[in-house]
Length: 254
Ligand code: PGA
Picture (tube, rainbow, N blue to C red):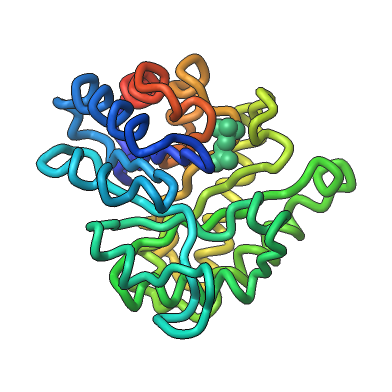
């Protein structure tokens, strides 16, 4: 598959995997994916497994991501983890504003934009998640929700930072439900987001920014989704917890 933008496929392990399980998973991925150069491959373990997974993937084509970080650099923020601490484990990416954090931790667009700025300041590439709920889609609010989330969560980024930001379109109704957006639905939302980036920044930034699709991506639907003109990768939850299925998603995408 020949695309202007390099595909980026990230596995979001969420609150799963002990250290030993995480190491076993990436060892499996290393075997399956050793020769893949066409895709940026990222795994996002829980914080507790970052250190050992980082060691296990050193000298491989797999890169490390975190699932969240603080908007602050250090200080009296009990339970929080700063960008600089992630860097110690050679973390390169950080998922921000996942719908689960928007829902359960009440993360706002304003907070997510502060985190995105802090990530860039530490040379981490943020994967900023946006997406509408089923209720919002049924009320014809998809574009309005995406406009608010994209504008709010990416506020304050320079053009250069925006080009290095990954946007993940994850319709909330498709996450962990087995319901995938149709090709037409995914392409429509991705094109809308890219147009918005062009409006907020410019055409060059919009052409360069990578937009991942997330929500029940699996080996059987990866090829079709990844072939869509404005889909530049995937953020994979459930199917990233097993080496064969995550590897097959990547292999089926190229
Ligand atoms: P899922 O999760 O692949 O299990 O639907 C995607 C995500 O939440 O990033």
